[in-house]
Amino acid sequence: MKTAESSFTDRLLGRVRLSGLLSVVAPVLAVVFAGLITSLVLLATDAPPLETLGVMAEYGAQPRSIALMLNSATTYYLAAIAVAIGFRMNLFNIGVDGQYRLAALVAAAVGGAVALPAPLHIALVVFVAMVVGAGWASIAGLLKVKRGVSEVISTIMLNAIATALGAWLLHKDRLAVEVSGSNNIGTSPLPESGRVPGIELVPGTEYPVFGLIILAAVVGVVYHVLLNRTRFGFDLRATGRSETAAVASGVSVKKMIMATMLLSGAAAGLIGMPQLLGASYSYSLDFPTGLGFTGIAIALLGRNHPVGIAFGALLWAFLDTSASILQLHEIAPEIVQIMQGTIVLSVIVAYELVHRYQITAGQRRVGKELASKTPPRAEGASA
Image 1 (tube, rainbow, N blue to C red):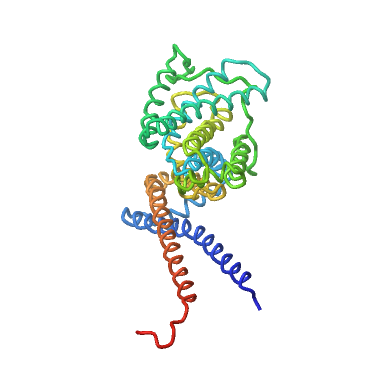
Image 2: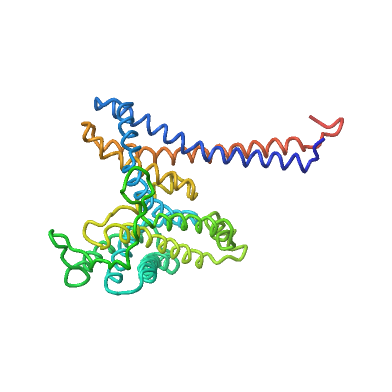
């Protein structure tokens, strides 16, 4: 016969399992719902949904497409981690996009101007990128701590400033040189010692996968350990849930805001490194943009969990990679953007429904427990 303590433990474990199951089911249902909406759009444009999805799946399963997908997923994963750090603190670092582009530009300029042994050269470029990303993000942190400025507003404005500053720095008379054979301009190319060779990871193709895919995996592990296995991570999550409770337990909210923005910015500085050190070797006008905003969508899809973010990054990379084949089959490639947008909206709605269900279930559970412990009324008491 079970004791009261073991019965309570069983109920608690059951609730944890149910909560975990709902967390997994919600994004899956959101993706399915997005697929249904996309199918309706395809039918409205006289395109067969099943055939379209089949074409995307067939192209995405090719070895070269898998390698491209892994490369895209690497940068998407780093972008989502940078965003998720802020989300866990209830901070919306919308400025990841400007932070990683400015960091990549300065890191590329520094890397192209020095000569060091390979490990030190690569480490220097990565370090500079993290410092620049953290420094740019700290501006928004200081504005919030000192003047109470919303980080959403300040980071959006800083994105615009970073874009203008980058264009000014990229002028050929400052950091950039002309790229031979084109009208493009960029920083001086990184020497061999500052490049990270690709990995032939996918059988059946010689197309390399970014060597810094290993860095992305390490960042994911550090993110999980830091936020879930350290006192700092506990304080960060606690402050994000309730600033009042955090202050009552002795946590400095202002310090946590600054620390979170610095960490988020440092992680943002890593976003451009796989492309810079593994493919382009220079920051030029055609360097990838918009990765910060993609990271927001993937962080939401993965619910700020490193494993969930990995699946979200792979899904996003698959959709982006397979979109290129649609035009050859006379299908508008914009259908992928419709599906991505629908996925994000569906995930937000699904998580909100799960949250409301958990609140309602908790209220019912407390009501039942209180009702079961109500003492019997005395005999002869008035009705």
